[in-house]
Image 1 (tube, rainbow, N blue to C red):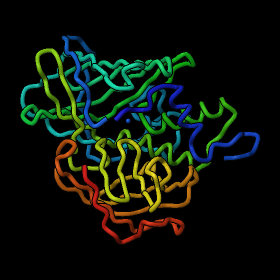
Image 2: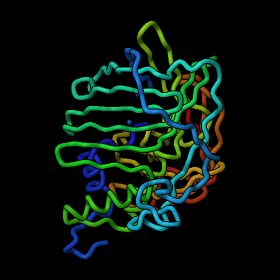
Image 3: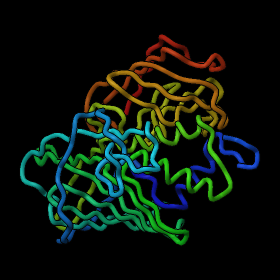
Length: 332
């Protein structure tokens, strides 16, 4: 999982969002990580402060300039930020005090460099992207299982800097303020539905426990996306008519779809205790709400036989080819 990376990327996302209108109109992330070189390094220290999965905190709590309720004065009073509970660490820490320079292959290699910097409880991911002419930093809490060679990450904050300025957020409320400001500066505004989807996407970043299986050899390390049996996840799953995309929500493919963006899209589903909800769009137009239940089986990397079973309990009337009450089994 990658947090929204830079001002340019954030602005592009917001301008493409459903419901973006002119103010004058009165309108309202490969399954395998590549090898990295490791070297010793120093970091700022941090605490592992996980809380119960799905628990909601006051947005902006612990940030500068907060009021008695823990909210910045210009933040939404309703925005909440999920927090992930990380598993207890097992074995000797293979990451603390080390810095990894990631070797990126494929199309991204031409425009990206990425480094990871670890303390005993925090991981900082720094990425340079020539497409945005910018640099971005994501800070995570982490734990590990040295016996199973697993790394667990929970997003704490994201910041970016490019030739258009700087941005940062450590809560959904801070992201909301940033998004509205940037859209307003372009003379635009977001509809309530579009804003709801953007905030749900941000909340999913904070709600997702990123899990990698790692291999260390001499001065290099490699990561593979790992399904830990919970949703949301960074691992992609596929079925005959439905895919659960890595960072792309849920896609529904009616008969005749090419699988190239011409399906129904639940961009930011909210998962909670075996149920999911969200807004469904078609051709970038929101057509209604979607609800359902899910179960999972297995844990592991791509091809390990893990499954997610979805049953839709509510779909817009215009949806074809997908029905409520039917089990749809997806595999990784």
